[in-house]
View (cartoon, rainbow, N blue to C red):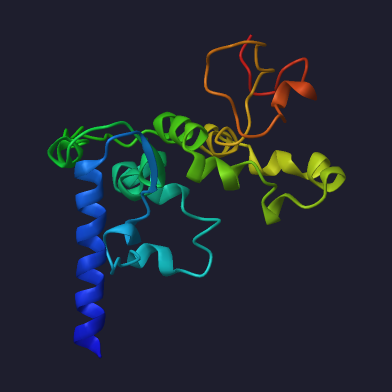
Length: 185
């Protein structure tokens, strides 16, 4: 039984790879790992109880590893007519990542995998009226504020701007119109 299943999986993968190599028109295929890889291991770091709310530090340290699996192009991708050799060569250039919260913030905003969750109110934000009067203790340092700026902008976004937009439309200066106590004038 196991041998039959293994043979079926191999044939399925062969069909997918052959189809990509012989395509005559543009197609959409799932780029989920399981399309070609039958077994994918979830990293140990993801197996903690509160991973979904406390992964930012890991993202700052190892963004390149995060994006290796969680980039938009690996989920659903438009594939123009091309051969299998050019597909296999895509993305082979390695770029050295130096930990940087700004890079992580920008990536979390443009990456659909990240922004899907970052646009929703986290459990720690309580109701709006409670959060409004209680959030200052969470933004006392620049490092703490940097965490806020993953989902929020400091200033009102400029209409028709080409800059990377925050996943939420809440921004600091909406309420803090005269600035902040820590701002130097």
